[in-house]
Length: 397
Image 1 (cartoon, helix red, strand yellow):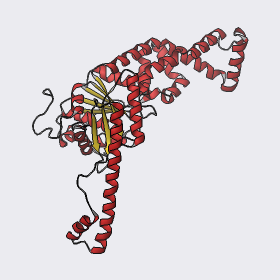
Image 2 (spheres, rainbow, N blue to C red; image 1 turned 180 degrees about the vertical axis):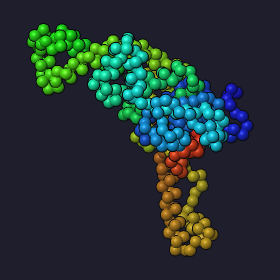
Image 3 (cartoon, rainbow, N blue to C red; image 1 turned 30 degrees about the horizontal axis):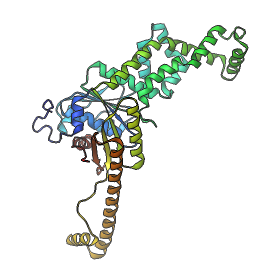
């Protein structure tokens, strides 16, 4: 911890919890979790926490995070990283323009991939002009995950940032991006594609007489329904993409190695709602299956129990002390007492869910609890407050 920036007066809210150690010692933090658990806000706050400790950090998000851009004082998040104004950071106690943010643009990332791996300018131009490519580069299932891995590799190897925090794609299986590079290789080099290309090449642009009877029948039926021009586009696309296969394979291996490095860590974000907790357990299992493991769990928006018992009569006396008339005071005391009881019940349920999560995923992993805050995370001050909470010590078993 001695290497961290702890200048007096600069970081009164820095804390010394396990997430502080992670943001100060790692190069890559991958934030995973189900949709709707506050993953983007947590990712941005972790990057802010790193900046507060003097590390140049980038939060790379996938969603069109307009609210996040507004919170950071950036007009619009784009593929190119934007710098959070130093004046805004100074207002929350962070010195220097050390925080940056970017939003993945899938089409642009795919274009950069093609330009990088194409063997010549003609191949690059042909792929980008292909109608099928233009459609798939924005709509391909798993394309967002692959683009995220490409962009992560680009910004990490670029060497500009001490820490890159990746807010993972909002998918049903939030660690599918781990397999995205291999899936891209399988798509281009799959058996069905190879059979199609060999048959197409033998056909000589739909000279069906050169094919076997079965292949000719299949191609004629396809051409009848989708058109010969479309099949030309398909064959040209996969033929050219196959020429890029070496680059895809190399990048798949490089990204896998990057994610398995000790300098990379995974943080699972969830809420104490049972469904979100179960999804967090499934994510942890998927990470373990990939020979990875969560470095920490963040349990967001958790209800906290009061340590003091409150009765309706106590509330009534307190209201009367504020000169609130008796009929209104009685009704208000009843509502407040009911609300307090409900909050206590929700806190007990959340605590039980956390205990189950800890029992299932092990007590050796730190669990950082963020209480339900009074408002949405909608500005830099709110992100700083969330960062303060994230910097706190882990929840005791």
